[in-house]
Image 1 (tube, helix red, strand yellow):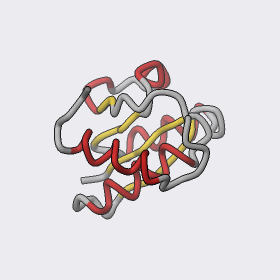
Image 2 (cartoon, rainbow, N blue to C red):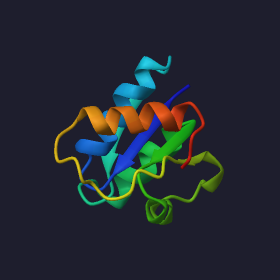
Image 3 (tube, rainbow, N blue to C red):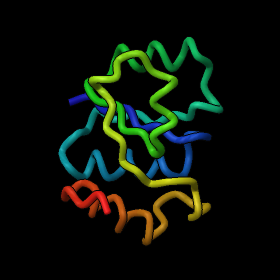
Length: 100
């Protein structure tokens, strides 16, 4: 499955989601940012992806294919660095189905 991971800048949350996606069997994963990629690039990536994992629900507004969107409900970046242990633990819970 081709997974596009999305946050604001395309670094912290999307990078962590990309690693988690790959660890869960999705080697075709690309990270991006709604503030750092052009609308044309986002459209191209949307067409490529089977699923679009977003860090925050408002990021869904940048995509037309709503059926592809998986809201990981991470909230704003409070970690500051990719692969922060707390962020990775939260992602593991999300991938296990815990949305609390």
